[in-house]
Length: 150
Image 1: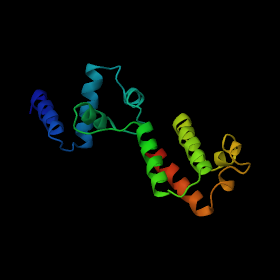
Image 2: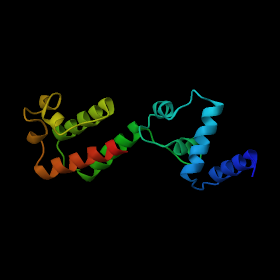
Image 3: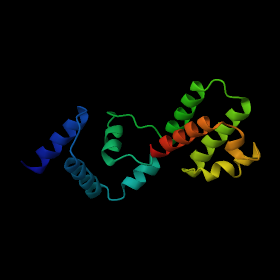
Image 4: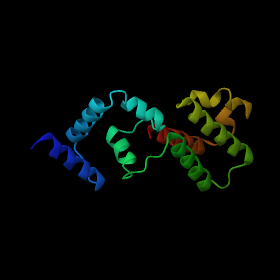
């Protein structure tokens, strides 16, 4: 099969929403690099504000096949869902979660230790420990791990 037919078949697969193999994704990456060497996966991740997406996800997004949320959208949605499921939280606890969300968005990471340091100690001298019980702390840690893995 010649390269033109192979390339056309691959584009058709993508347009129809079919998955492509890692080899086909590599072929697309090579073709993209040959046509536009300045476009790299790192550049696409910065442009689309998505830290972990694969090249094929960007291609599918660009073709309108798959919607890629930005990191900010993913984080915001996760925190909004968490707050909705914990409707009993006080205004200070909500303020802490908002501060945490903004910290994650700005830094792109968070550790347990961060949660007992500034800026979190501005809301309570013990940080997260003074604001939430252990079950809630575990849920918050799980939330941050989930969004940072996205």
